[in-house]
Length: 207
Image (cartoon, rainbow, N blue to C red; front, side, top):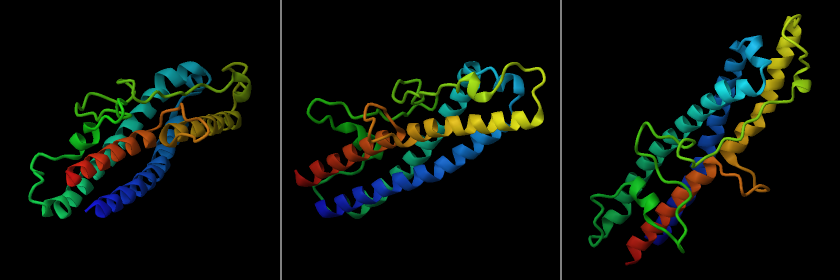
């Protein structure tokens, strides 16, 4: 049984990476469309655009990504439990859920990386679990000295510069950076929950 649970854990790690990669393409596309449809006035406002427009949108998209991946993990977990732990009569799996197992264990006094959000009105950023670090590009990078006289070609360049500037920040929020372990990422949150669930399952089958 232990080997089968470890196999499930490894498969789900790969699932998380694949799902986040697919979601990155979707978020890039939606953010790109949003930038394309934004007015020149707001685009040239710099930090105001980030705080009032970009951060709320990216936060919603990351939250959507988290919930979507979590639902897939829940389905996979229940299917795996029905196949593995159900064979052991001594284990009562009636009330098991991925959410409960993923936040159950507190190893060595360290709380798991992120509590699972049951309340639909809650969100990762609002709960202080995932902090978005989005900043505006320098005005000099946008090449903007004022709104008046900004031509079509220049605005196309400004929009592309916004996309190029925000893309690595969005990717960092999703995947993190091994060179910057202090930066919390959605991948880190999901892997932490998965690890906790796997540890909880191992404890149950070895008792």
